[in-house]
Length: 53
Image 1 (cartoon, rainbow, N blue to C red):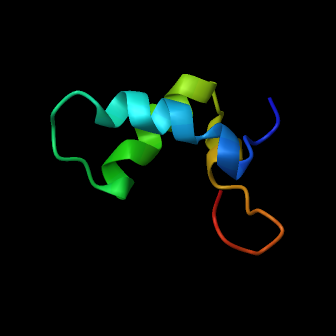
Image 2: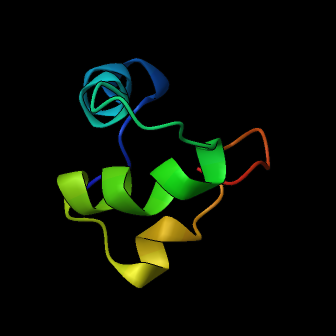
């Protein structure tokens, strides 16, 4: 699967954060990556700006 673009992440991010819990961005990364079915290699891939996707 291609790495999701920034705007594609919003809806899954909002769905995950709507459960009433207080989430940190770090805690949301894994569950949202799971929503997209990303592999371990895709999870550490860098985007063109050289920041982690």
